[in-house]
Each structure stands twice: as structure tokens, then as C-alpha cells.
Length: 359
Image 1 (cartoon, rainbow, N blue to C red):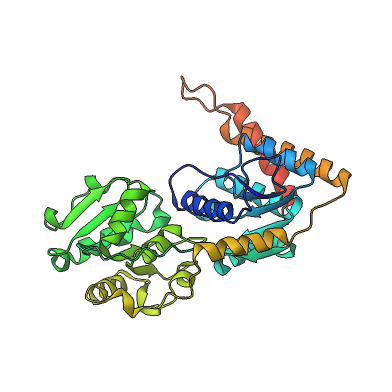
Image 2 (image 1 turned 135 degrees about the vertical axis):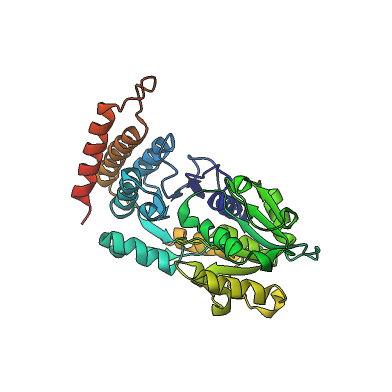
């Protein structure tokens, strides 16, 4: 039986994909929520960093197959030492503890190996996220949809704002729906009736918006494999993507890719009169096929029968994970807004520890 450890509950694309993966594996009789029944463990990126550490230690001691589904590199999405420290931990777990690695796209694999060459020597496979076709016959009353529940500048929201500011007259009679933090507080030189804003939306509302939208703009600069992009395609939106990272693996048609604001504008205006049926996305795998790929890879890996190796791996994993967890979460003296020197000591120790392990 398979068990997934480290499922985020943030409502984002990653958590939605893992929910679907669990549903597919359960329907096939290969998934269990019991740590005692599961013999194959899929740990998700860094989201297990917490109480789930104990569960992983248990499975290491029991000789379960441990496979890590990588994300990132996180330093490409976030700034600061915390992201680099998490990357070091994830990479170290991948090449020192795990029995196998799942990458989410070819770009993702190349990028991870570029930052940590040791990953190239591990048993691995590439499995992109799956698509769920929900083509509907809703009236497409929204011309353009953009959605990102993050204010991270790598999500490319500046492209949308620049598009509106640079070509205001072209969009006066178009219907936009923009989802993202602080969109409501912005001033745009276009009639307000053309815009609908929301800081965030839940999955059900986002699904409804996608079924009513003609175009979906995905301007993110760095994506292992975007689940929200696959959802939009599944709902029949014509996707327009920034030409970079895994975006071009999901959307292979070059006429739906852009690199400059001028190219984005040309693409949007030419596609508004188009039809979804004019584009071919048959190369994208459905969720059941993706679940079968995960099942095949996970079940192909033989567990370790060396007791000493299992014990040493468990001890190393627990020590390293606890050290990083403390260094990331140990915050005191909030009242005086002072920097806790103990926190800096833990961070320094953690960074030194992993710098010795990385090539």
C-alpha cells in the first residue's frame, strides 16, 4: 500500500493535485492512510517538515520504500537563506535517505541537477501532473482570466498590469477577472465595468471562473509543473503562457507562448476570436494515467533489508530535519522586536551542516 506524507492544506495547485492522486490510488485499492499498513511512502517536497518527521523516521526503521516528490528549487521562488536551507535539506534527503525521486517535468529535473549534481545518480522518473477534462458549454462571458494566490513576483503579475497600462484602449470593452493579492487596490486607466477582482478564491469558485473564461494567462517564470494551468486547459480555456520553465512542456504550441509584453498583447488579441478546439492537448495525461505512472514507479523500487543502514538513516534524517525545523521556526523576543541570537546560531549550524554535504 502507498501513503503520501506532506500534503499541504493551503488550497494551492500542489495540494489539489495530491488530493486527486490520492483519490485515484484509493479507487484502485493501492492507497492507505494508515502508517502501519503502508509499505511505500511518497514524501512531498518540504511539506513534511513538522510532526510528519516522526512518521518518516518510523518508516525508515520499518524498511519502507521512501520516494520523494521534489519541488523547486525553492531558492528560485523565494529570496533569503531559509529557501536555500530548505533546498539543501530536500536535496540531502533525496540523495542520502530516499530510495527514489520524482521530478515534475524535464525542465524541473535539469534545474534540480544543475543546483545539486548528486541528484543525477539517483533512481528517478519524470511524471508531470495530470489533467482532468471538464469541458463545459457555459457561456464564455469572461474574456481573460488571471489567477495567482500569491504576491510572489516570480508569478509574473507585473505582465498583466503592464498589459493593461500599455494598451488600455484595447481592453475597454473586454471582461477581465483578476485573482491575486492587492489587485483591488490598484488603479487602471480602463472602465471599471471591464474588471472584476478578487484577492483569493476557493477551488470551487476558481473552477467556475475557468469554465466561463475564454483565455487563461499563465505568466509564472518558474514552475516545476503548474497544476492551475492544467486545470484551466481542462476547463476549455485557451492558455497563453510565458515562454520558460515547464510552461512550454505543458503548452507546446509556440503560438500560445510569449516573452515580451508586445508578444503577450498580440497573442491575447489574436486568440480572443479563436476556438479551444483549434489546439491539440492530447499529449497531456489524465489523472488516472498519472496515478498509474506513480504506482508503477513506486512499486518498482525494492526496499532496503539492511537493518544498520535503516537505523543510521533514521537517526541522520531525524537529526538533520529537527535541526532545520528549529532554525526556521525558533522565534523569541517578539515583544521587543529583537533578533534572537540563538536563532542565528541554529541557522549558522544548519547551513554549515548542509554545506558540507552538498558538492
